[in-house]
Length: 97
Image 1 (cartoon, rainbow, N blue to C red):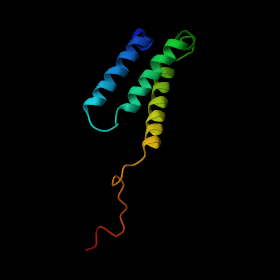
Image 2 (cartoon, one colour):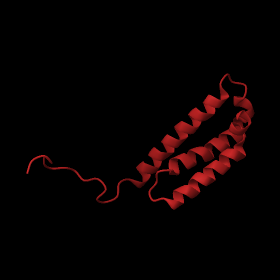
Image 3 (cartoon, rainbow, N blue to C red):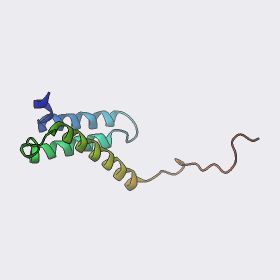
Image 4 (spheres, rainbow, N blue to C red):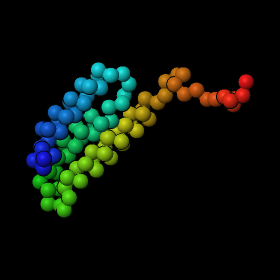
């Protein structure tokens, strides 16, 4: 399992597969995760030997994946914003007639 987590090609393939699944479903639910896996592949390709010397390199890779996935999802959300009618403010109490 450790060999697979340090393989940037495996992360690249995972990112492309997640991006392909995203194309099949509607919305932008998996774009952040696919960008996170592609950035993780780049990170491992560039700094894989360096982070292998740290005490918990697998945890560092997974934390990097989590941070880049959530961060890219927020950046995409900020760039695209809300569509018209997606956010409906409630002006009255829904429990009253």
